Image (cartoon, helix red, strand yellow):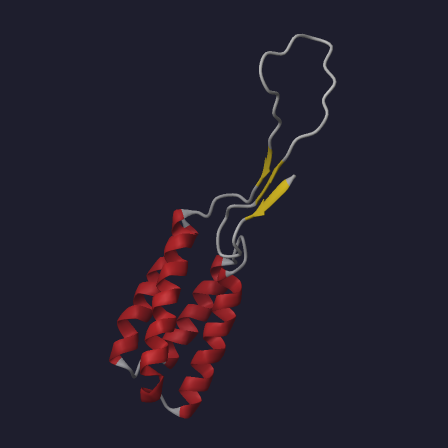
Length: 130
């Protein structure tokens, strides 16, 4: 029997395949197979877009964090961690994400390289409300 597990960052679920003895009282032509597939619900396009924008925002934060004050940098890192945990949930709380994204945007507002990307992330989070 083989067990295949989806990667942690995918929505492939778990696939189990194998063979066993089967007793049948009727006529069977060829091989008999049985497949069971258990998987997660597919990720909505809006959630996938929010996760992609968040990844862009994290990358930009790494590149520009030296332009923030120490207090803003520490606060922005806390908001990023909080948002990351929420986005990692199968069904993130849209209102919580919106509030956290607004708070993060306030902290990075002094860095031009982060403002546009933060705004794109806020827009993608707003897409979760529809």
